[in-house]
Length: 259
Image (cartoon, rainbow, N blue to C red; front, side):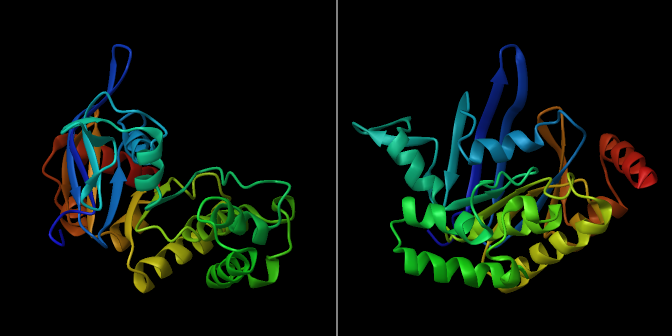
């Protein structure tokens, strides 16, 4: 079991009508590996994360998390599409931070981080409050516990969202373009929190990002998606300095010039 990848996409296909968004994706992500997904709009990047969070159902293939199937379960001796109970249990190993925060506007930062541990994990309010306070301190917001989202900057909201995801004690953290809705001067504070997570916690991290410099510095591996497939993948230095695929070269040339 220890040799099994933390996340495995096995021949995973996702279609919307006649449009194939992911085309027989095969991807293994090791425990504690940091993987960045880059590529043009419409290449299937965010769909990868949404399927891991079971926000989208796959059409074909199997997704595995921590050595067991997420999208399927054993039923009468054969693999069948997973029921809601199985999905909830396995999905509990995954946390996701979205582009647009998705905080509860009527709850303080502390209450936002307490809600799921109490209602889903069954923690007492005292336990959940202690955990939430510790995580808000970790993301540099100990003094904002009683603030509501409307009282926070975009960078602060995103750091609350990271603390909220971590409150569920996930093994896998997903980040979906978490800086793209932020003012440029606020991007660094969120990236610094992600750096800290990667350095100090045993987390498998999968990140869709347009921040090429950060992907290059932070990742163990970068995957370039094009047309619903991985066109190229490898260590950041290799992929950024010496890409082999013409599509990768074109994309990097365009985004690095624009940046």
